[in-house]
Amino acid sequence: MIRSVCHSTRIVIFSIMLAAELGANLWLLLDNWNVINDAFELLPIPAPFRWKLLGHFVENFAACVSWELIATRD
Image 1: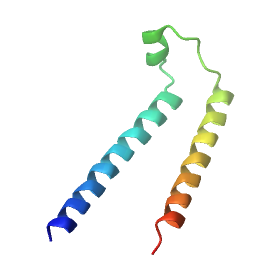
Image 2: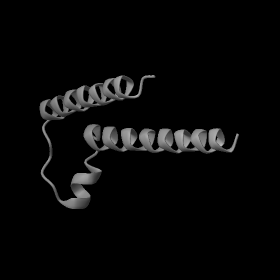
Image 3: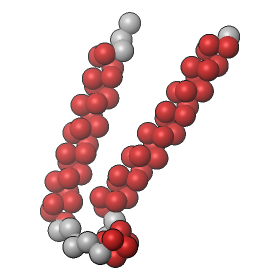
């Protein structure tokens, strides 16, 4: 019983961290207000390049999830 509670707690913590990382990545990638650019004095990123990065982000995420499903199957 203790092991399953500990395991489920780790899954919840991992899920929260994954959601936070996804949210932060998408916010930084698709932010049109340039909050980050102004804070760090960066050059603006063109919209087509942002969409290309979003495509790479989605492809990488899908590949990682697919690999985890394959590697952790019983």
